[in-house]
Length: 405
Image (cartoon, rainbow, N blue to C red; front, side):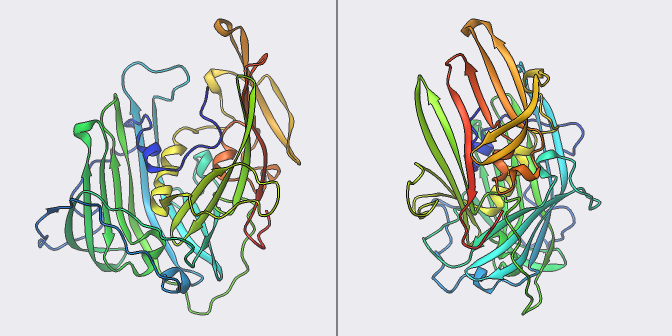
């Protein structure tokens, strides 16, 4: 059965996906020099192994650069990702895929403790991305003060560099984490020692991931092309959460296994450059989402890279699972929402049942206002009949105070 709607944003999920090299996109190769378009003097310090992951000191309350965010703070990265699955493929697998363009993060409103950031993906020429999952700007409310200690582990062999990128000179540290001997990826990350306007992405200057092993190939890369600071005193009204990336929202999925039903709520937040996510039993009283003390935390820049990877699985809309055409085009009810939908059916003779998958007809439509991005591109319902169980989106909403979808 297809992975449930509540898919993980964790880096491990991103790296374990089947990825391969697409011929229509430039190959992403591991590197130990500054990215294309940057310059660096020949002096590079001697590499030294990092026996323990280096972590940032947790920011004290009132000391985070997010508390000094300005409207107009902006970073942009060129990006590319490609994959090619090797060997025999499962039915419905997309063997080759590629995407490229520019991803931009910009502060559009500040009402402390909230900093409102937009995330947008465009073609190199500035037109909206043609990739369905990347085709619309997303809104990310980020909490600027500290509710818990958050760390950004940096693992691997460390070296220091001096380089010029986005029109500025940077002192930087590179972390090269090579797991290819164990069929893992090669991760290459370059961070500014003094982030300045790059606080939005923990100082990231360049990131690349190259996969190896398990019959897969491919890679992804982010390279800084713009960094700017907004004007002091700039103000704008916070945007609505009609098209949220995920933070600030929740959604419920009903699972049924061997006749036993259960409901899990996925709650998402963002704090000081981290995406927070946890699954809980829906509360019967009080806040829609409890505190995020135990939530999984993923650095914002890694979550962006993961979303680019995931976009390779949705190259067209409407989808065509297992090559099927829609059997029905009719609305479905999800909680209080009426959603135009496409229904696909496939007979499974060995199990003596039929698999029924329902997708939103338009993943960006107004009917899905307030729904987290990831759930828009997963089945609204994926079940087998008769009596085979499955998963179904049952409701969603917004929990950030004062935010409306």
